[in-house]
Length: 147
Image (cartoon, rainbow, N blue to C red; front, side):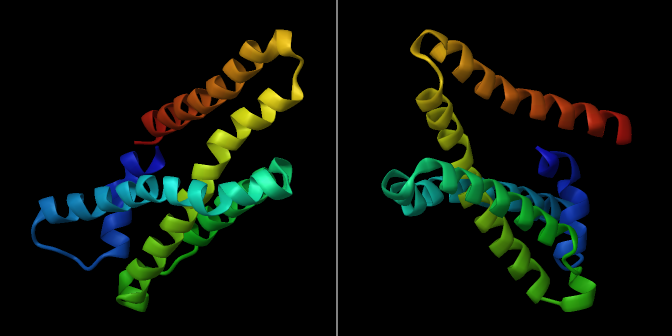
């Protein structure tokens, strides 16, 4: 959700300056879309590993990779500093983040479903789903205050 609010800022820092603001908006939204397109790829490539070796290590790995890729994006140099390497690295990190988050969401539901008693299954999965929406709510509130 953060990209929806600051896509103009990220696009201006990561891509070369354009005279047309519509192109800059499309570049920023393209970064947003890349993360979503990478989600199923992560599920296909690493999801099977979770079935074989265990879901808990893969869930932990996906959380760590998501956080580390976000941290790396925060410290990534701008286009003015590194040129074309900056958008290439940002896109690569966004793909990695999307793949990791594509694992995190379904694995959290499966992990919760496997570790709660059957009578609490619907409530526990509802809490897992609600936690994602609480995160969206907090990001919306944060940017409502900041912007």
